[in-house]
Structures are given as structure tokens and as C-alpha cells.
Length: 433
Image 1 (cartoon, rainbow, N blue to C red):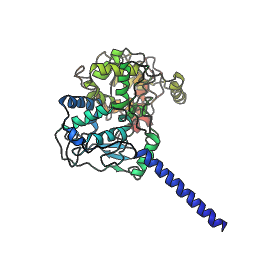
Image 2: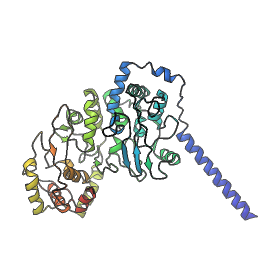
Image 3: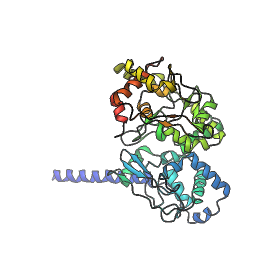
């Protein structure tokens, strides 16, 4: 009898805990308080040309078209596959098509998606859509974005179903993820900071969603939505360097004009944009107003610096385990393949080829970017201020893993550079099959 009572009590306790957890998840994810007015669709017809123009600018600030346009496809019609560690997510159609796009959405539906990460039908959206950052934007900016998207030509292109491994795409899994990593929070200006700083913070934290790349992610894909301490971009294997560290991508000691120039043109006296950041400059930041670029520069320059001890700890550990001493082979390969552009002393050519001596991108503790740049080459972004950027040729078919590791180790140990060696394994990990 006692055993039966114990079993019954255990079952009741478990049922109560399950019910409490379910209620908590529901309140956290679905009780968002957004009122969807029946008259909103009519009011959307009153949008003004000025609001549409504002929305177009905000769409560029958020780089929306880059994800919501399939290569070679109609703008904003979706269909682009975005690979994640959990499967592939396909971007949605943002044109005003009534069947596949936003034609039947209201401004309230769109606001709920941006601010709360829920679709028109109330379903939870995958966080590949960066609502963890977009939650910061104001309702007025959300309405302007919606007005712009509704002004586009409708495209009848059906949305593709995501291809995520079970259970990651389920509503239950998304509810748990959101409960762990997401809380709606509209941007609140800091009263002790200037209007320019607050504008920069709003752009960097919200529409710019810089933390989507520059914050490290854990095993479940969670990250700090305000974090900028650097992280490896999943599936792309590019490292977005820390914006808090002077040894990575911190700009605390840069002049404001140089920071703004990098965002505007992709190049500056202090550095160049490459890899995924080059695409951000190409499609987004080069189109922003100078005042907004300076505001972003002001905010980035004022970020609290990472502890020098913490920033150097990983590098010191790696240096102790695989010190970079260079080799005659690496020096010979550099002379054969690199010296013509980058110079015998790694000094580069101003305005064309970057210096390698003392270059933070060369000395990063994570070597993924350096390896990919030499393997596959590439160009900086073509911008109005730098319309014909010089490029880096690919060496993927020229140098094997051993040779590439040798020449990169030489770069990281010559001309006063002191960084750990690059191993053949690190090269092989970046070489696509």
C-alpha cells in the first residue's frame, strides 16, 4: 500500500512539474502582449513615401537582402539556404505576395516577428533570423521596414521548408531555446552617453546585428546578443575577431575617421575588410549616412577593452605548445609567391597590398581566416570610395598543406611577428573537399 502511494505521489509530482514547466514555456514564448488590430491592414495603405524611403535605408542597415535573396533570384523573394550546425534554414519571401510573402501580414504581425520572433500564424521562428538582435529596434523603424517591403513588386515564390535535424526545428525545441537565450528588449538609450553614442549602439546592437558573428556560440547555438568578444562563424569557418581586444579587431586606439572609413569603403590606414565582413561593407555599411557611420565608430571605439591578461592567455598557451620559428622552406616559398606584392620585409604597398609585419589579421590566435585567405584568395568590397580593390589570388591548387603551413608560419614569425606556428592540420581543416 505504501509503495502504491509512493508511486502515485511520484506521478502526481512529475505531472505537476511538467505542467508548471509547460506553463512557464508558454508564458515566456507566446504571451508576448502584442495586440493585432483588425484595422491595421487598412492603416498600412496610408504609408508615406518618406516612410518607405526610411524603410529602404533601414533594410540596408540590416543587410536584409543578403539573406533573403537567393543567388540569381528576385530580391527579397527568399529561398537562400543558410547552413547551421543543426541543418539548413531557408530564408523566407519578404515581398508582398499574398500567398508566399507578406501580402496578408499587418504591421503588427511584422513587429511581432521582429521584436518577439514569431510569425504571422504565431509560430516560433528559428533564431537564424536574428530577432535576438532585431528585438532592439523601435516600433517606428519596424513599421518603416514593413512599409518598404510592401512597396516591392510581389514575387510568387513559395517558401522552402527548413531541413533541420530532429528535434531542432520543432516548436517545443525552439521554445526551450528561447527560454534559455532570448528575452524581448527594445533598445533603451543610456542617459549618461551622448546622442551619437546611443545612435551607434542602436545600430550595432539592433539592425546591424554585429553579435551574430562577433559573439561566440555554445553547443546549442546560443550567444550573448550584446557580446562582441569574437567567435567562429558556424559552418563558414571564418573567425569574427573580438571588437574588445586591441590584438584582434578592437578600435579603441583608432581615430574615428579611420573606423568610419573602414565601414564606408572597406579599407582604411589601419586595416581592411575581408571575408564575411567584406560582404557586410559591400551590401550594407557603405550605403549608410556618414553621421550613422560616425555614430557606430563612436560606439565601437568606446567599447570596454578586454582584459589584456585574458586576451593574451590563449595566445600564450598556444605559443608554448607550438612556437613559431619559421623555416628556410617557408622563407623560400614566401619569396617565390608573396614577396612581389607584400615586400621583402612584409611592408606591403599602401593602398594596394596590406603589410604583413605587425598585421593583427596575420597574428590572430585563430588561424582560420589567414588560411582561408591564402587558400581561396578574394577581393575586398568594391565601394564608391574604393571601386577597384586589389585582390589576393587563390593558392588552393598551387600549395599543398605542408607548403601552406610553412609559408604561413614564416609570416607569423618574420619581421618581428611572434605568433604560434600554423600546422598542416589547420590547413587541412579549411581545405574544402
